[in-house]
Image (cartoon, rainbow, N blue to C red; front, top):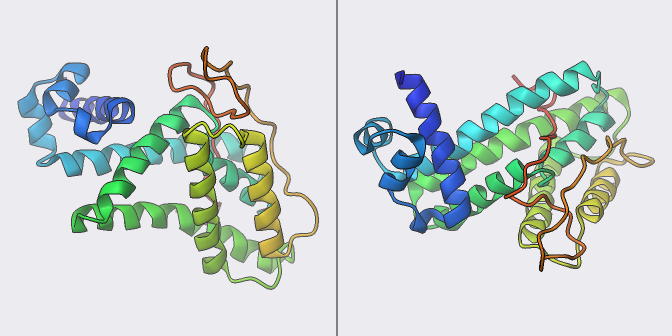
Length: 239
């Protein structure tokens, strides 16, 4: 196993186990076993569990950004209203992979208040999400699609709104569906940027049937049943 390949397998194993069992429920030995690596190799790449937590989330976020930037660029969705709609989808748990990543994100947020290291990591990851949002709003102001708003303010509000909606979906809130969450976010952000009309969303991906005993309005994908991944890319001006 190469050094880079071993590191990637460790990150993927950590992402899956922490999302399933929680940060406190996972040992380094568990991650090493799932990654088919030694505990020494895990410690070689990551000095602390906190580093492993933030690196796992950053790795997953980067992979999603790269994959879906390629996908959406192929569909020529470059207009600011289209990019804003896609970035709303980026912030919601549309697939089983999204559910897993949101659980890991929740672990990071919960621990950031008591750890300066994790707080810095969380701020950096939040910035990666807010920058394409702000860039999209700025582009919309230039084209005339959006008006009377400040890009950084909209990005901050959008992150807070999407985080709250995603948390309810992950918790299987029976009063909120994925379609409702997307509609609410789209409507509120369209109003915030002064966009006239409804944002041009792409069709939602097929959602798996809920597991027995969990039926309800929520449409977030079950983490045990994978579905085709569909998330939005970064704005075109984001490097």
